[in-house]
Amino acid sequence: MNHLIAAPFLLPGLTACILVLLGNSLRWQRVVSIGSSALCAVVCGVLLVHAESGPALVYAFGNWPAHLGVVFVLDRLSATMIAMSAIVALAALLHSVPRWDEGGRHFHAIFHCQCMGLNGAFLTGDLFNLFVCFEIMLISSYALLAHGGGVPRLRANVSYVTLNLTGSALFLIAVSLLYRAGGTLNMADLGVAFADPASADVPWIRAGALLLLVVFLLKAAIVPLHSWLPSVYTAAAAPAAALFAVLTKVGAYATLRVGTVVFGLSPAAAGLEASVLPLALVTLVLASLGAFTATTLSQLAAWLAAASSASVLMGIGAFSLRGVSGGILYAVASTLAIAALFLLSDIVASVRGGAWQDRLSRGPRVSGSVAAWFFIVSIAVAGMPPLAVFLAKATMLSAFASQPSILAVALAASALQLFVLARAGIRLFWSTELVSGTPEHVPSQMPSVRPLGLLMAAIAALTIAAGHADRYVREAVSTLIPPSQYLGAVLEGSGLKWRLRIDVRPQAGEPEEAR
View 1 (cartoon, one colour):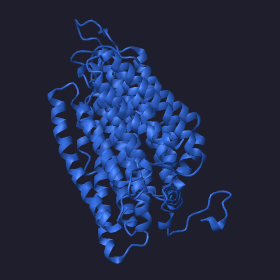
View 2 (cartoon, one colour):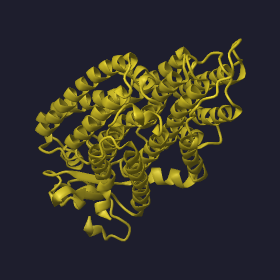
View 3 (spheres, rainbow, N blue to C red):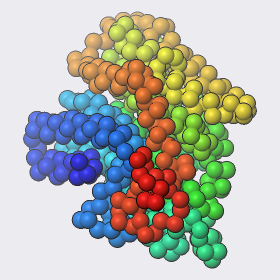
View 4 (cartoon, helix red, strand yellow):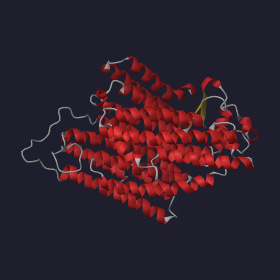
């Protein structure tokens, strides 16, 4: 089973190579691409179930020790994130056929490279390989953003590339500082080394932690590094934008994983806890207000994606079991909902057609079935009951029960988002009317609603299994706050238990002297 841990990373990479070799045969590219994505989703589902059975599982490529080689770690948290990524990727890929993938011969190959980077970032247990996966993910996103051409995409790509190249440089500097202080880049190994550092190493650790926080907040589009997201997500093709909904969650995930495993027991932990929550709250308010400025449904979805990322960081910023577990559940449910909204914006644009597209204004009539889909998706995006997004948000906000000011900000932002979505629905479906002398638009090739249905079915399944999902995520977070259990499992699995100098809770049935 351990070899299967590498499959979500290696399978998309191998598929991308095969798709490049297939050249101009778009039909076979579609068959291989969708088949591989479906297989990857099945593998991620198997790993999600397998991760529940015990402690973190470690896969060392080439069987090298963790401080020398590449290590992937599968625990409940990483399994949850790769499963979410696989569902979104499959839905986005299905939506891209037969329209969006015709804009370039390597669309499918680039798409799978993007999935490779995402899954690698969720699974890696090494800081440098996290950087490598970030670069795979970002290079692919540059190409996906440019897919189809056009001035808006080129303009958005220039700022996107510039900001992320700066972030990559800061990431490398941070990695160098932490290697200087810890002598390794394995996250668990660094966590042990930084638990009781030499006084001379503390400034290096603090500097590295600060730089990494800047990089991760840039990826998560948190103030003041958020301005790139609306233009990029609006300019991207609908399937790419749906997959991009996962990108910001990588930044939030990295903040949690690195913040707890690497710095959870170090002097830098207090600084991280003090910074994340205020910045997330400011971003949540600005993104909710920014949604009022949206003139198209895709632009509205982009602002709500920024608000979703901020909400996740708000839960993580609590650095408590209830707050973080609620934040992770919200990350999964809201990402599925935001991806669905991007796909729906493309369906609306196709139905209205021509210059009207998905503009939030009067135009050609849209069918009742599309309006019904908008209503369902809006309930999910706004976090209204009874869907899983509401349950996750309620769990997350319960962590701030003793902080009414934070609750007030979060609830006000939710009310703003609900109002904006309601206003968009009225403008698109209620007050629309045929333009004089213009026949009702009937699209020649309306996108299928099945990929949208897949995402909403995943949200429905998460809602039905909410109790089990909550327990699953709580168990995942309990191994990270504090990180003692995670460190023990990873270092023992990596053959580095001799480095462990902190108390690790024994597993069930394990004698006390075996710690």
